[in-house]
Image (cartoon, rainbow, N blue to C red; front, side, top):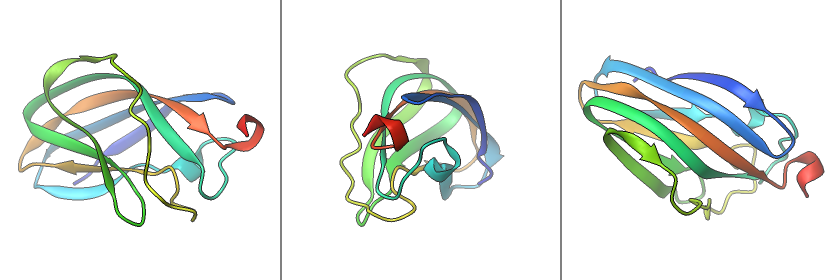
Length: 125
């Protein structure tokens, strides 16, 4: 799976990240590498506060990476998620703390624009 990740905004407290993928075989890969965001410290977390998404075929599952990965949300169809904050409850004190994993189904195509809230990153402690 080739998820393309583009950081659109990266402030002290939030980040906006655009994920896109196109008709790949089912696979799992890191969708958001938290260490690429400003202020990242090992064990820091990202919470999902808002998602705009469109999945033309199949679905994509987003998980918080940890000692045991924790499912955050499964997206299919298109729409906007603006419900309660999806908190990262994964236990992970390493460099991959805060990372988000994406898993697509066979031939899935689409995009997800994530608004992420930073926790324990630099000035946000």
